Amino acid sequence: MRQTIELIGEFGLLLRDSLSAIGPSLFHGRGRRLNWHNLWQQMNRIGIDSLPIVILVMASIGAILAMQMAPELGRFGLLPVTADVVALATFREMGPLVSAVVLTGFGGSAIAAEIGTMVVGEEIEALEAHAIDPIRFLVVPRLVACVLMMVCLTVVGDLAAIVGGMVVGGMFLHLNPVQFYEHAVQLLTVGDFVTGLIKAAVFGLEISIIACFLGLKVRGGAQGVGINTSRTVVMTIVALILTDLFFTTVFFFLGF
Amino acid sequence: MDSSDTKPRQPIIELKQLHKSFGDQVLYEELNLQVFPGETLVVMGGSGSGKSTLLRILMGHLPYDGGSVLIHGREFADYSRRELNAWRLMVGVLFQTGALFNSMSLRENLALPVRQHTDLPEELIEIMVKIYLQLVGLRESIDRMPSELSGGMKKRAGLARALMMQPGILFYDEPTAGLDPVSSAQISRLIMDLKEKLNVTSIVITHDMKAAFEVADRMALLAGRRFHMIGTPEQFKASPDPLVRQFVDGLLDGPLNPKADQQAYEADLLQKDSV
Image (cartoon, rainbow over all chains, first blue to last red):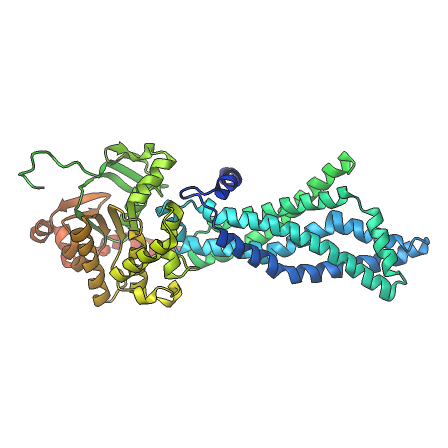
């Protein structure tokens, strides 16, 4: 019990220190510089590499939603509403959540494994020995990259889902693609879009912080790296779903 | 110490009754030591005696449980984050494995601390990188990745990186461990050169007795949770103390005999059998 409380406390401290280090890291100061090259590398690795998977998965989800909903809605003469359902479910829920799950598998596990390997190889101690703060040097670029790329991936994923629904609707469900698009656009509000993006940004923060935390907590060599890498995936997915539930509840009661 | 000195030398680092434990396991009970400017102090001891832990404490990576660590006369535990960073910039550390950043070339490894802490132009940093790589004989390897280097080359590169901020103090953690005799001699030569040319103060953790006697001004033997003996290499060579003799001469029998645990071993075996 005490260990769990300590662990939560350490996690909270890492979150606090990382968030408070973002500001100073953007300005040039001795030993405080954000490693721009590292940030660019992380954005590439986390975002660009995940992009094809997110597009594929989200387009498939758009198509699945359309095929699942169209027959039921068609029975009540509401076939065109299929586009509304696909758009709403995607922008508010599926876009951020599915993109986050893909990013967890792609980026979160890689971050935990990389930082864990650095711990084992005394690289973190070497950074500290050179008075370089590992949070500023390692955690902040990954955190910023994850948040930025999560938002970008969610936007792309949302569009991919609409396209997936449109294609399947046009091919198999007698839904005119133009009509599908118009229905989707007419229904969606700025609120739907923004709530999805807020979720995406928070999910990005969660993925990066959990991965960095468990990476930095690696003990015991290669086995420890493996254990904490798989823990990162499991814990992040649980945290994502609980956070999603929290946000959905809050937005529900706020009337968004 | 030179008796002709009118003013007594002030130690850079002073340990007073230092206590450190991990859970129930007591590592040090009362560690007392002084490190003076410009000297090379070799700390020796068996595996698990806490030599590397001592360096971690002196780098501020590990807290200590009791006693004092005085750096320039000030209690180390009272150092602020800023003071700790200033101390770390004064100290260069050669890690046991070299601890190079695996995702960076040697050039990037050496340039990193300078880029992080100074506003020097890239051209000057490049010159510094080449000078220090030349010093350790690795200038030709400037664009190689750490994974492409041998153990000895990694250590030499780690030493070059430790020198980039021109520290006044160097900590060496097992600098010759796992190296062939030639590489080991190269590292020992580098340690001596740095002392002669740059008057660097050094703490060398090792149980390589040949290297220890080559580089040491003073030696300290860590055994039984305290420094068993502190003295010059000549004093160590002449010491009749059985523990010192066993460690220095690498004798199988003596106070450090692992057979001392024979009874516990037998009891353990019998207990297992009865389960």
